Length: 288
Image (cartoon, rainbow, N blue to C red; front, top):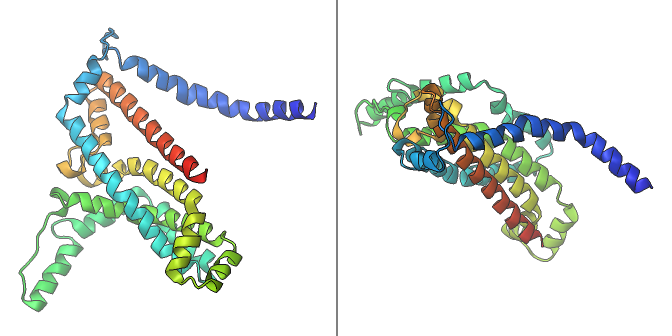
């Protein structure tokens, strides 16, 4: 009797959330799936025509390649940098106070961040001025007028922007995971003769699998939100190295090519779902 009451209370409590999810997420996405098989204007059924169209589109394939490259570069760097910073911070007594400093970039408006990157990396920016001064002092090179945002270097500018903005929550999550490890385990490892690296390898890292999974998922999803910075820095048609999926969606939306958008959205959603399920399966297998 008590179990049935608890289940009923549980269902009543979650019902508004499930209703909201169904009405505002699932139903619209199902409508997108339907539109991906029809033309944008007449609604005529085209079968797999829209999908063949986007996979034959050079801009879409370039955007997919750049997005995958960006994700595969940024996530390992972000995870590693966050861990390397969190480890020494975990030994400080006032580590909790330092967390707010690392979360500061998340609170900054995107337009402000973009303005800073422009001031640093454009032709007459601070970086070129600094390099020109260094060349003048050392006599090794002349003035530098590299257009970082108009060449392939724009990709690495975007990578730096992503890591700088998202390293804060990564560090905080790593810190929370490290500080939750019982001190007794570390003391026992010391008694057994484990050094600093041994403690990290055999005690700390095995106890941080849940934290690692959370960080990877959040970093993976946030890597698809870098479009705002890329768009504000270089516009709708940036250098090819930072032409991302969101650029393609934006340009198709402006041109009202909703059939392409629908097909690409379904493919992107399916890829994200498969990637998250694979990560979840890997996590469950490691736990078992």
